[in-house]
Amino acid sequence: MAAKATKTAARTAARPTGDVADLRLAARGRGRIAWAAGQMPVLAELSRRFARQKTFRGLRISACLHVTSETANLVRALVAGGADVLLCASNPLSTQDDVAAALHEEGVAVHAVRGEDRDRYWRHVDAALAHDPQITIDDGADLVSRLHETGAAGAKKVLGSLEETTTGVIRLRSMHRDGALKIPVFAVNDAQCKHLFDNRYGTGQSTIDGIIRATNVLLAGRTMVVAGYGWCGKGVSMRARGLGAQIVVTEVDPVKAIEAALDGHRVMPMEQAAAIGDVFVTVTGNRDVVRREHFAAMKDGAIVCNSGHFDVEVDLKALAGLAARVEKDARPATDTYVMQDGRRIHLLAEGRLVNLAAAEGHPAAVMDMSFSVQALTAAHVAAEGDRLEVKVHTVPEAIDREVAALKLKTMGLAIDRLSKTQERYLASWREGT
Ligand code: ADE
Image 1: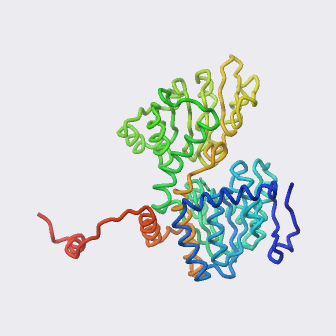
Image 2 (image 1 turned 60 degrees about the horizontal axis):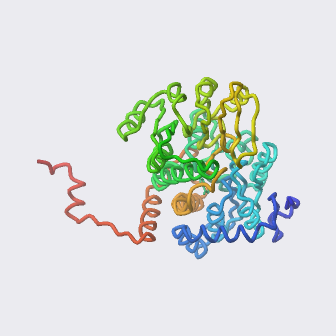
């Protein structure tokens, strides 16, 4: 059942415009949102503050994010602050339809249907632009890219845009380098309270969760090949090792490769790793990381998945080209490609983000920090108004410190304070041996 209404009804009627799968799922969605809220105390505190101060009064915000129970709590915090929020999906396979229905029923314009095809995906992004936002929030930069591709008219009204993920920040920096960027953007991903926890512990846990939900495979004693040793790769490797897997890391960056080696992992090119891996996970942010020659060398029964933002890391065309047939029935989110020589390669979640497509994404307790950084950065944009320079901004350090302090408090943890003497010592270059 598609919940659709006309555009003109968007900001006036209680039921906003939108496109969600089935409004009958709303009750289950409300339950999930409440469950996640229980793990997101920092965001709850900010939400109460926004409600008191009406931080976003009169502002239209368009968010292109994974539509999950955690995102719903971010949206609620923005709405509590007076924002008129439209939410669309940042990935066709990550939407939780029950959450989309619940949010939609409480008056948020949601345009997201799990499994939507490319046309519908972009129609939803276009709806987010038609909302005429003053603040945009992206996970992967599709909204901002589309805004720039479709002319500068909408860009004039955007006070600032926030970007959640590494891949999105890379795209924005290249737009800026090309002189194409027309709006101020914030690299939320680069805040410490985002990437140190979300990319590492969030991706680490949720990727393993996705692999296990999709396959129920035993990781102990298996060889897992992790392509990319950024924060996500470090997290995936650490957690898989904790389950008893032997980790092989492939890298193009010599420094990261040394880090992987000193962390105790084997390091080798994919060409070699292809023949020994039982499970392959790509987290590079780049394309064509697992290719034809690698599929040709893989063992029978190899599992291949991606936890990077876009579905380009595994060469799906090459895999399809090598296969005699594809079997889809064994398990959800697992397609078995049967090669001409009889070997089977299991591809998870169609090569899309395995942690969101085959599981539920990062746990709420980690998204509490990521989305608190998002919420405070949005409040910063609202306070700055049209004074922000057009460039890729870093998140103000005060926001990182505030989120960390609030998170520590909710975890019941205290830390030491510098004495005056220690402060003077740190500030002085005269004191040495
Ligand atoms: N990205 C990764 N995990 C997520 C989640 N649970 N919600 C929203 N975005 C995410």
